Amino acid sequence: MSTTSTPSPEDLRTAPKVLLHDHLDGGLRPATIVELAAGVGHALPETNAESLAAWFAEAADSGSLERYLETFAHTVGVMQTAEAITRVARECVEDLAADGVVYAEVRYAPELHVEGGLDLEEVVAAVQQGFAEGMAAAGGRIEVRHLLTAMRQAARAMEIAELATAWRDKGVVGFDIAGPEAGYPPTRFLDAFEYLQRENAHFTIHAGEGFGLPSIWEAVQWCGADRLGHGVRIVDDIEVDASGTPRLGRLASYVRDKRIPLEMCPSSNIQTGAAPSFAEHPIGLLASLRFRVTVNTDNRLMSRTTLSNEFAILAETFGYGWAEMEWLTVNAMKSAFIPYDERYRLITETIKPWYAARMDHDAR
Ligand SMILES: O=c1[nH]cnc2c1ncn2[C@@H]1O[C@H](CO)[C@@H](O)[C@H]1O
Ligand SMILES: [Zn+2]
Image (cartoon, rainbow, N blue to C red):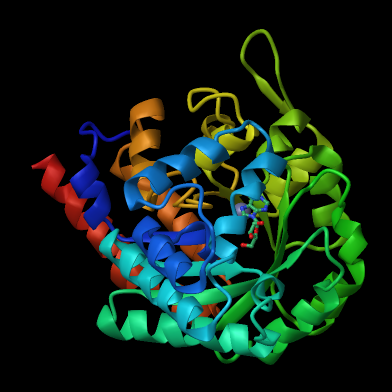
């Protein structure tokens, strides 16, 4: 299903895209961090926007998830007032809309934004305000929803899960856990996941990034995750023999058979050491085996990336053309946490017509 022409970065930017895994506190504009930090007296490693951008990319490029996460001290540190949070949320929507994203689920951990005296509700309200302003300014070109994250090293998952259900009709569509994976298995938060299942609510779990198969197995088979954040290590359950024939183990088969979406983030995975290189990134194998693969940014600031840039990397590395990009985009839209009729409408009215017209144009 390969198309002949390789899409240019500009083409990739205009194509309608869907983003399921993007951290609000991993996508700030460097200039905004500089301004906000000056306002609250937060000390930054660099005070000029361009040097700060380079610092984040370099510091996050450590090969370890734990060290990668240390850089968030300088984003979370300037997101402690309602005004700052609203501004960051509004700019996030603007930046995603400018990159051609038509639907996004943006996540953050409310518990990390209470150091300036806000309560959890006020944090979510501040984000919602910014999202609403950004969407209004984009004039209907983009829909953005929240996912509320609980931090694995903390013990507030149940509270955050309840916050997610309290806000479910006001912009929040799901729940997640993030932070260091090794030593913090998903079952630590089983009460929160069971609560969400009883509430008919949706959740994704960061699993198979900084730790391997046991983490994915717990996320899916104990906790009932609707989607997997990254999930790259599922390849450890796939054996490719000398003739190149892949054999799936039981967990990999289950994930593929159940169409459990994998929120893959190529650039981020290289930085944290979850994948050795773009060419060896598991997304190539998993997409060829028809897992429900989706493409995401994770942290645009730390990876100095955009969703269209992640697609450009895949186009270059694996030769993906418009057909593959449409498949990945429809996969993401099918996997979103908004109601079926809304997903269906975006697929049939926004996504499919655009790719059909584009491929038709190329075929002439
Ligand atoms: O790829 C990741 N794996 C695990 N945790 C992450 C990743 N990216 C960001 N965060 C963590 O999620 C928090 C809420 O957005 C961030 O503050 C960061 O600590
Ligand atoms: Zn993430």
